[in-house]
Length: 112
Image (cartoon, helix red, strand yellow):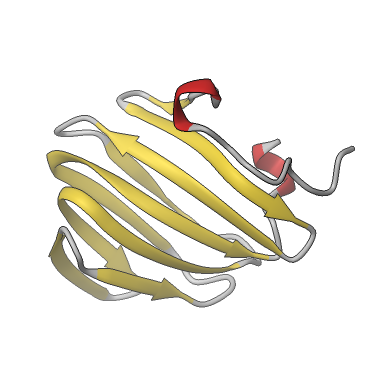
């Protein structure tokens, strides 16, 4: 399995992958220690609550999301961000179509 991406990723040449109904992701760069992923949501789409052993930091590029991390819930809009520690239950509901920029450490091999 490849353990790093090409140096450059052009959005128009990088494949979108269906992640779940109304959710697509585009991998924008990675190596064994880090991964950057663009995630596009349609209004009403759900990021199903889940856990993983990776640290995650995310930025809301556009749209509006109700994000739940553990017992905390907040509505976030463009420019807002959040952090998820390893093994913490988290998920979201897209209130207005938008894009999240997710970073993971280490990389998410399950996304490749």
